[in-house]
Length: 189
Image (cartoon, helix red, strand yellow):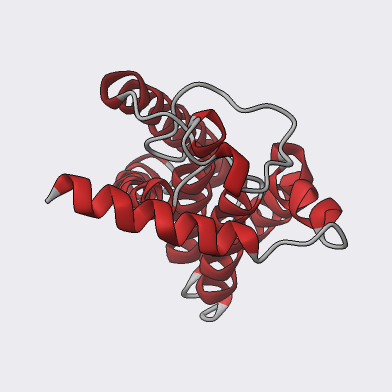
């Protein structure tokens, strides 16, 4: 059963990865770069400030930092435990795929980019839904694009990305609930 799932995952990876072209490589390399979305994060912090004020924003900055740290470290722990090689590190498919990332890395299950982007999308989308009800849909789409970029550049299988999304969504929701509690308790004037 697991072998069949891995075979399907590999086939889907090869299909999705092969959709790429050199014309668009620069775009997907930009999307997959962690620094690309700093302006988006700054804008989301500004929206959180406008919606909740300085006191609550300070609490949110701390909980966001904890959320990203938790999500990232848990992802790394799973990678070291599962030890599934990345597609770019798989000698059986390296000749059949497009690898354009800057580096490969050792293990890929599950995707840290996918889990972190989804955690931010769910957290910010839920925190701001009362003020910007459609923002969450944009953020979920953004996270999906980030996840696909990891397949495009050749460093993650689709299952790595989907698992990252799932864990990120859970993490984002839990930290959203924690933030609501902390803001309600400590930022009331």
